[in-house]
Length: 319
Image: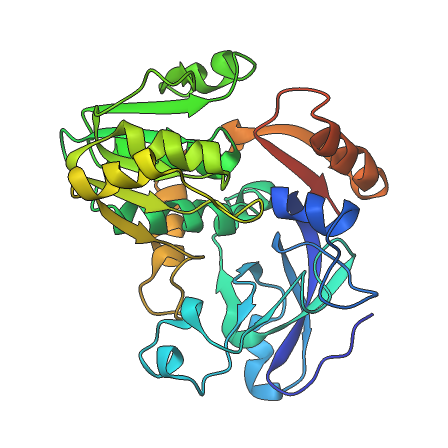
């Protein structure tokens, strides 16, 4: 059982999604220090709180914003907590939710209607990251939209674009492996073969490799908008001809990071909760694999080795 300091709560974990970043943390790069329990996409029930004034949270169904801001830097003063210069983070910089219990600040708790399943609530974080990117891209009605990347966040971004009445939403992947899955969500699927060029008003890059960024630049029309979201696989190098396209097409390029959250105030997270509660987004359909807590390693291995096509791999805790 983790310690619970003043202003914090203990959450009994009920569901925790596996993020692609967890794969590198577990198998290659490691966490910021060792030992650390990973897991930052999760939901649960508030088990206890440190302070009597927060006792109303006990027993609540909650999702958790995993970034813990310093509240001292300029972005925090502007309430852009996702850009905090000295943040802490549940599941990478401190113990996370691949565990039966996790400690989090009360401010990071977001109450969820009990009718939303825990496994859906556990996807608040990736849904919010996807929505944040679509907002940055200013996607609007009739836009032609391309998403480079077939992960859960890329698919979710496609669904958000559809909700904003985009005229066409294409997901671009490296092979035919995920075509059936993605078309099931009502999204067009294209294979990244170098032929997609100058088509789209808005492109979201959600992979983070030099080749995917080159595809994104090629796919964006003249004067179009490109948002870079994918965590970089390493150094990103662009050849001269690709760089020229940025200049000559006068592309508007924006980086995006994480998602907006401000406690109970309106944010990406409150927008996602509202959409899930109103059934505007069917979160459950994105879960392709479920593992009990003692089969966590099987879920990690499935994603590491790409044993099967997957969208969201979910682990269930404290059944």
